[in-house]
Amino acid sequence: MNNELEHQFVTELESNQNIVHKVCTLYTNDRDSHNDLFQEITIQLWKAYPKFRGESKFSTWMYRVALNTAITLYRKSKRRVQTQDYESVIFKIKADEYDATQEEQLKLMYKAVKQLGDIDKALVFLYLEDKDYREISETLGISEVNARVKMNRIKKKLRTVLNP
Amino acid sequence: MDELDLLKKDWQKKGDQLPKLTYNDIHKMTWKKSSSIVKWILIISILEIALPNLLYLIPSFRQSMSIYENTIVDKYFLGMTVIYYLVIFYFIYQFYRRYKEISVLDSAKGLMRKIIRTRRTVKYYVIFSLSTILVFIAIVIIGIYLNDSFMDNFTEMAGDSNSVSPEKLKTTLMVSMAILGVVMIAFFGGVYFLLYGLLLRKLKKNYKELRKLEV
Image (tube, rainbow over all chains, first blue to last red; front, side, top):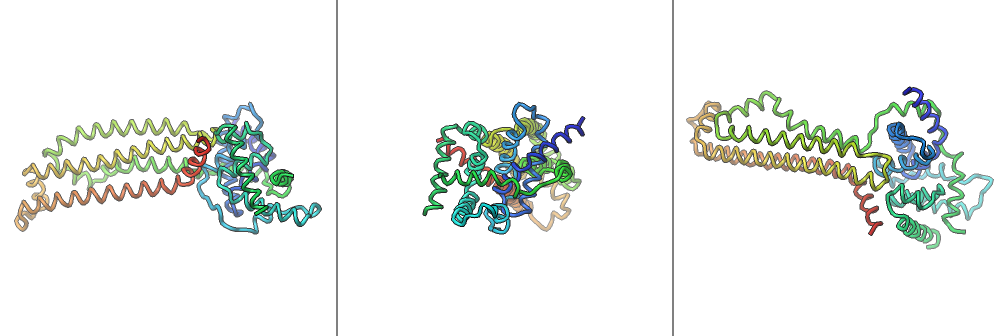
């Protein structure tokens, strides 16, 4: 029974692992920390998996656990250590879409997002993942109005990075 | 086009640039042990509850406590021990209840609030423990001051009562006890606040940030 549950869990996580990798990319700055956080999120997901009743999609459920782990539970925080190599691997632009101005803009944007606080990052992450404000507010535990207000402030902040 | 929409478009194409873990890699991870702050709070709390009580199991500590037998201290000691353990069990129960409420499936704010509440239980426990040490030492000092037979017990144990006058010995003992009390409280209090301060610094900052949004 437990083996079956485990197999089911690993299969689901394997096909949805991008969500976790994206969270790790935002919240860590080097490969070791990335792997470390990925592992902690996996452990937390697995511990909570018996409570997952399939009321929502597995991926929806993952967002909450992954963000809670990154923001609150993860202990070894190596934030704001400048390791550009790793970032440039993750955030590089595909060759066929190369546009010097756009690439420069995106680089600046990603850099600015990575410098945001943990909560702001979570908001931006859910926004980039195309989540609506209801889901964003429920995940973070704030009201929908406040989520919108905060997001607008972040947008403004990011805009000033591009147009100082 | 909105700058963030440009980012969103690019973000959603990131999939093929991200690392890919195999089924086996992920399977191995499910067997690893968590190192989350909740786990650390649990470990530290168990140590904090167990250590002062384990102290009594050390033979030399028990022996040194035996000098208080048949003294005024002894009478208070039994009553205090009963109250002490009642309070300790209350704290353990309260801690367990709050610890169990912590769920990774909560909202970010809910999760942080519950961790802070659990930690607060430990904080009250530590304050209680340190106060107990203080009260205990105060009783011992009063015991030394009021009871001469206590001094007889002590000098017998020391085996050399002629060289130092009883009054001087009494004062020295009382002052040493007071210093020991202050040092112990400062040490345990310092370790506790440093440990939790470091462990929960990030959480507190984020919780404050989330609460600020609600104002």
